[in-house]
Amino acid sequence: MRIVLVGPPGAGKGTQAAYLAKNLSIPHISTGDLFRANISQGTDLGKQARSFMDAGQLVPDEVTIGMAKDRMAQPDAEGGFLLDGFPRNVGQAEALDATLSGKGVALDAVLDLEVPEDEVVKRIAGRRICRNDSAHVFHVTYNPPKTDGVCDECGGELYQRGDDSEETVRTRLEVYHRETEPIIDHYRAQGLVVTISALGKVTEVTERAMDALKQSQG
Ligand code: AMP
Image 1: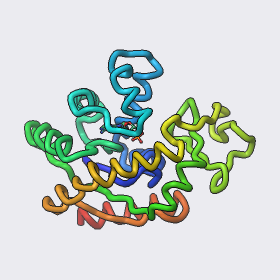
Image 2 (image 1 turned 180 degrees about the vertical axis):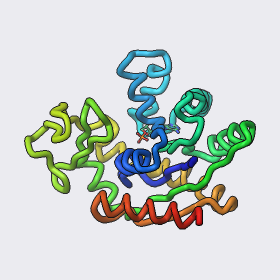
Image 3 (image 1 turned 90 degrees about the horizontal axis):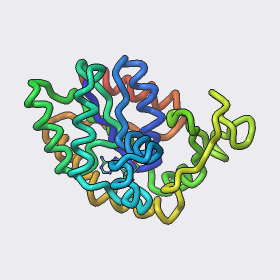
Image 4 (image 1 turned 120 degrees about the vertical axis):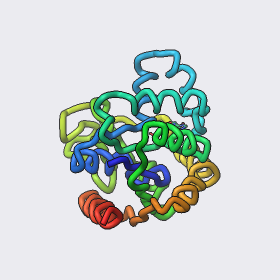
């Protein structure tokens, strides 16, 4: 399957993407993770992306689209993938559509995770992520680790993303409404959008998502 996951920051895209990709046996491709890996490796691409990310703005399309296409061209993504955080504007969506149709394939679904705005800010401000694996996500109040600052899954160090401060979250939300939400209409016109609520336990949301994806293909 070829799936796009869309939703505001804090909707739980990264967490859900990891479970869904595992259930569906397809790679989880997160442009945010790719950028963060480039930053920690000190690559030119990471240097180009950093200031935009720190400010909560989108990294320019010239950088982002090439990186996403390279990743999708890897052998493990031949039979399908789950995109998390890409496309993030209509230009990227059009580039993705053109790339896929050039290969004679198409998206199967666009899963839209819905979550109220005040919940988003609460979720992000308390979010703590494992340095070893960004799918290991905790929350200081809603899902605290057993030991402060230590990942329950692998013992890795938990940290707060630099762009998870309340001020940057507000900017990221504005960017989401202005740039990313229009891709939902873009894909609705293609009959691909499946919307689910992202509220509740992680496992409940995963089940909801799997059911919705099955129904959309039925
Ligand atoms: P995420 O991990 O998906 O929340 O992404 C973190 C940050 O990476 C975003 O706030 C953007 O600055 C940048 N980013 C990730 N994906 C994209 C994209 N598709 N287009 C532009 N910027 C992106």
